[in-house]
Image (cartoon, rainbow, N blue to C red; front, side):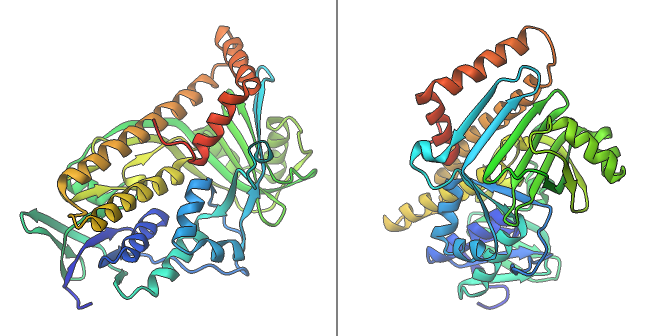
Length: 398
């Protein structure tokens, strides 16, 4: 493909979501360009386990299998979890999910972000109809009746039928489109680290809701756990630089000693938490996917899964249009996709934000009410199964 030639789709951002969309569109027979200032490094089993991990739901795994990158990811490392336990620290009420109850091999996998992005990048390097614009940045773009004219910082110019913003929560493309966002910060940060539990949790994803925010322990492939602890931002920052002994003592108290002492085995990092939903996901021949479109509270681990759902829905629409001989990027088609995906993301954002606020209440009738609700759902097998199937992507959004 010549520099400055015409493309079917130009994607800004080669993170997990942008790279997955680029690969899917290329496999559908379209010419794709992918702009990425900092290309990901393909995975290696000898690399240390990275702090940034995601919980890949079954529907996201199916997309990665379809793109033929899941075997490479698993060959490096991925930790399946077969059970999930969620507990309210104030009341002691809890709910449990087990894959065996539904005839599933697991509920999901804990995987490093960089392994997914790196495997997708390696696959893209082998696609003849993909132009990898590594080290490049978007400069600007215009849309007219003939399509989009895109300028890169390096001086090259491209034309495209579709421009995709997959450039993260601070999306430059979204800003240039003058698309605002709804939501804001929670006054909380996530403190992340790897820990070695005194008593292994095995293939259990464990979460305890505290008034300050949820503490999650997620299984890693090497037997350790990924700790994701939501805290008021000042407290998270203090623990990031505190002594190991102080952090381990705080963890023992916060985890209620469920797996004994949790020994820190990595560096610590914090990241601010917010809910942010773009006011539109589609505008003309431009669309937003992943964090450029939606950022939700991480308590349910659904952020990247929502992004992969964006990709799966768009690929289904594109393939249906191509099979019928239609225009895959017609404004009306993109608008319908955008409305549907924004509805799903808004629902998720409100639900996760509401849960976070609900469990921040430490006394009064709300504590009793949420305790009753959690115990009731745990006993109502059909409802609990529906929740599990929705999280797995077996049920359509509705």
